[in-house]
Every structure is written in C-alpha cells, then in structure tokens.
Length: 427
Ligand code: IMP
Image 1 (spheres, rainbow, N blue to C red):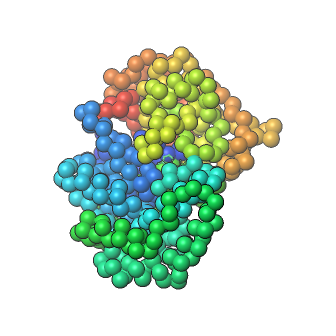
Image 2 (cartoon, rainbow, N blue to C red):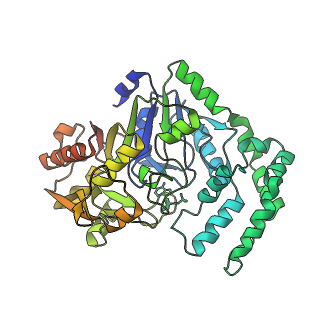
Image 3 (cartoon, protein in one colour):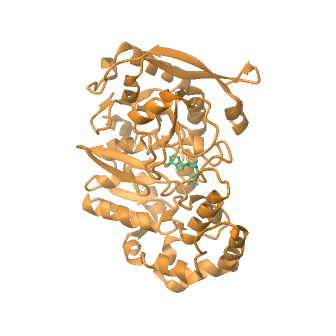
C-alpha cells in the first residue's frame, strides 16, 4: 500500500504527530512488510503500540511493532530506555511470531531505582507520567551514569556501573526526601543487581552494535524503518515543559542516535481527532458528553496504563507545529471512522492568543497552549466508512475534512484509517 515510499532508497521514519497514541503501530506494521530492519529509536515501555490482525490484538510497548511479522528483523536502539520485564514478555512475542530481535549493547536499562523515583514523585504531585521509570532513566543517561544492557555480561561490571561516582549512595540519600510518603522500601543495591541479573539469559544472546548494523544496511541501500514512541507534542525539547516525556520524539531522535540525517519520508501519524493522557494543556479538549462519546467509540483508554484518555477535536495548530518541529514530510490520518457516530465534526484551524490570531511561526509554549482560544471550522458528519479502501470513495464531507487537514498542516495525506483491522485503510 505504501510500498512506493521505499523507492527513494533512503530510510523511512514513523512519528507520532500529536500527544502519543496516534496509531503508529499499524503504520509501522504496513511498512515493515518490505523493510529489512525495523528500529525503535526513542522512549521506553511508556509507549503502547496496538496492531490488530484477523481480530487478534497485539500491544507492544518496547520492541518495534515489526516483531509480529515472521522473518522481520527488529532493533532496539541506544536512545531507548529498556525495562527488562517488558523486554522478556516481548521477546516471547517475537519468538512466537518467528521474528528476529537485536538489542543495542549501549541501551540504558530502566531499573528499580528509576521506577521507585518515578512513583515517589508522582505520589507527591507529578505530571501524570506512566510511572515506568522513564524520566529518571533518561536523567541518568544525560548525567552519564546509565547502566547499559552490555553491563549485564558480568556482575562485577554491573556493580561497578551502579556504584561508580557514588551513584547508589547518592540515590539512596535522595530517596530520604520522600520519607514522609507511604512508599515501598527503597531497593537495596543487592536487590537491584539481582533483579537485573535475573534477565541476563534473556538479553545476552541478542546484544549487538545497532549503529554499525544500521549504517552498513544504509550503505547497502537496504530498507530501514525507524519507529518513534510517543508524539512530537511530548518531545523533551519541542513539547510544552514540564508536561512532556523525557526523550526525543522528533526525527532528531533518529539523527542523534544513529547519525542518520536524510529520509525518504518522515510520516507523521495523527488521529482524526486529538487525545492526551496525563496532565498538561490541551486547547481543544472536550470535557462534555461528546468527549465521552469519542472516548467510548474510539476505545480511548491507555494501552500501557489503562487510563481514560482525554479527548477533543482535531487541533490543526498543534499538528502544524508538530509537522514543523518533527521534520514530518507526510501525514497518515487514523481513526476517521470514530467520528462517523457524530452529526457534526469540528477542527481548530487557528488560536486566538492575547486577543490576536496566533502567528503560524509562533512557538507553542505551555503558556500559549494553556491560554489559547481555539477558532473552529465545522463539517456535517458522515456515516459508516469502514468499507472504503480509497480516499475517493469516502463521503464528500469526510473528503473535505481531509482536504482541510492537508491545507492547514501543509503536508500530503498518504492514507486514512477507517477501522481497526490491518486492511481497513483508504489510500
Ligand atoms: P513518562 O514518559 O512516563 O515520563 O510520562 C510523561 C508524559 O508523557 C505523561 O503525560 C504521559 O502520559 C505521557 N506519555 C508517555 N508515553 C506516552 C504514550 O505512549 N502515549 C501517550 N502519552 C504518553
């Protein structure tokens, strides 16, 4: 369906163009059919990528969504932070599906100290994280004190990584700041080591130098597909701090970790409406029955935490900003069918901010997102579209809606999701 994108002989990338949960998994699944390698480049087990094949739902959190395809080669890159319990579960999925997995030996491990601090901070007024230890793991990465998958080869190496520069002592001392909160005991050093080493046999057979593999593959003009976690609006630099995740969710995340600066296409995936989980400003949020209706019909509950997602109309200003910040060249619109139950559909085409229309070059800071007043365009609704396989077959109102998205976001739309199954796509 999208296989012509490989003609450029350059790598392809799939990014979330909103606040995560856009349906990237299914786009990766399509493109993975012809890829030599599928590479997850950012985030960790905070993500949830759902793919439905013949009614069977598979959710991956950490390994690339490619693992459900027989014969595929899937890489976990060094910019991902790796939760070992989730890794073990997903290695089992890959084995069942007869897919190959390669883990970069520099990939930082998310260990129990990270999970402890994430939970502690969330218990005392956090930002609504997934409590998977992602933020603390990236903090350690930036502070040059990560424990890496390669440290699992030898228990002494692992102990050294956890104690160098007084790492463990310092973290244990910092944990005292939360002594007034009812939390599980802070893990002892031996517990941390024992827990990590209990995954040793799962991990060691798959260790590799993924940058070498990707570089060589690109020199040979093989097909490399990069898969992002979360979405550009949650990017640690481009998102609205502090309500972001801790990794690079833009194409820069690929460049930073793989030294790859040219792409055949950077596909931004956006739902036909907007959702967000966790705290943070959300200009087009619907806090009404309509929001509930979209949530129920779109089954908008977190794939990782089960939390109900906040729902709202499509925010084209945020999408346009994500296109610009993410390096997005093309769009894929998912879940257009969810809107089929509505009589009217709205989208935000501009923000009023400080009594003026926000200029398209302005940065979407937290303050802008918090204070923005959306200006709306309106369409009549449409009926069931789940049978459409061509965009031209869609009802005229839906086609006009897509045209409007294309015009405001200023990017071509490659395909549109009209139902949850692999084949329910209109091109
Ligand atoms: P963290 O990434 O767990 O630290 O969470 C930081 C923020 O990012 C919170 O608002 C989370 O809800 C949000 N977040 C992280 N991963 C995802 C995702 O895959 N989808 C949607 N939101 C996410």
